[in-house]
Length: 401
Image 1 (spheres, rainbow, N blue to C red):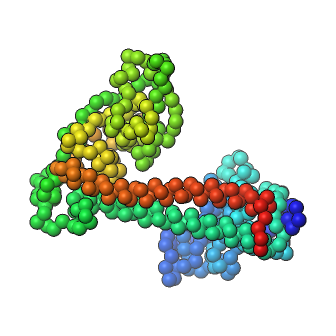
Image 2: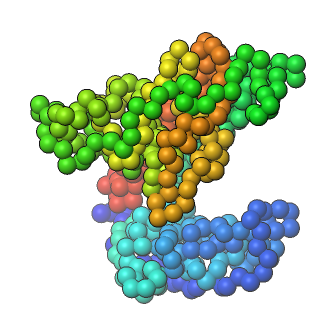
């Protein structure tokens, strides 16, 4: 291919190990400790005196993240957990392009498989690849991919901001400090509950068992036989992620005797009872998740919808104060667990009217919509970046410069 050449890593760069850092390392930069210290997986802190005066490329040398490539800032320190480019053997060199190109070679695939993972200069030096000789083409490719990265970073920042807003809303709306319209309640709009403390007027202190019923525990047997040819989704505790979403698509059959017993209905709420996933929860929606039965040490609750909107409690189940409750209740042993009686004892503040619950929910729904849209954008941008890298870094698609 005209303007491109096949070459080996060792024909491009010479590496040397970084230098062990034994000084004071600060987690965050300040006016004095402003020089980043790089380890095998990027910046690990900030120091007072730099080792290097110019930006360079480094490769994680040892550990789980060995093989990762980073471009350093102009003045920095590189520890001996990384190798740094000590000499450039190329005539034309754009550092941003080469940071991307070297990362695409996936050096971690060439790590030693014995003992602690590590990559060596000799191990990665023999890797062959093609690259654009001309500095202008390198720069053009780097600029395109950098623009995509900048867009991804901006979208991620929007997600982070929305998640911080949601956390703040949880702390204020779910405790009644803030009204659904965004204004804060005044002191005279609270009353004192002897055991719970400040409660907004028009709200109550409720236990979970007062607004829902425990309608089943543990779930169906995974080895059940087919039932009328139906194959419902089989939900286990390991299928629920940290955000109350399903992560697998396993199907299972169930015998006729237990089919009605374990078949989930809209707005059934599941809690994981035992194991590493204890405390995780899921609000079941058939339209989103398909027909399903529950299984494997799950506790099922059915809400009294005249008292509480299921989606409202789903937000409570994601809150920090519910997390604190789970930590306090969880028994640590061979298998951590929380039983149905303990879940049922959970106390929380609840607006008496479902209208106010809906108004509060709408605030969370607005934020969740922003997060969902931006997560969809991230997926699209991720696919775009992958496609561009496959085409631009191999010369399948050439850029005009």
